[in-house]
Image 1 (cartoon, rainbow, N blue to C red):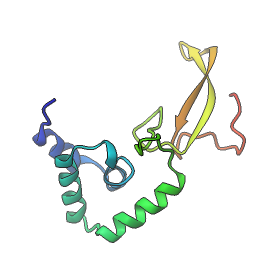
Image 2: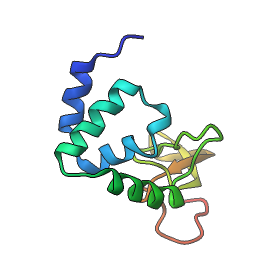
Image 3: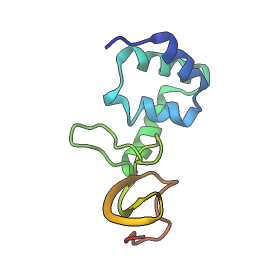
Image 4: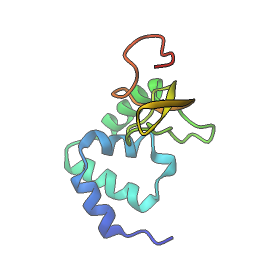
Length: 119
């Protein structure tokens, strides 16, 4: 598959810093080297140092869920790294509960209670 570096560069420049930090750290194992170079260059232009990248990775590594190959799990609802897995109902037309399913959720989408049961 061909990597469109122009498109990647446009995407990188439009992304917020937290998204780029996640891509350069926890999502690193699944990234193309050329895309990583663009991301790291953009982060450097935004004043992010290698030390800051390492600190960010250490912080995220404590909370993010990873697959056995080292790739970070992504939230089922957005592109952020998942921090928990929960059981939720799959709903027909968003209304009628059909069956329970396991979903991966980021800090924003996780259930606010400590014991995440069925909703």
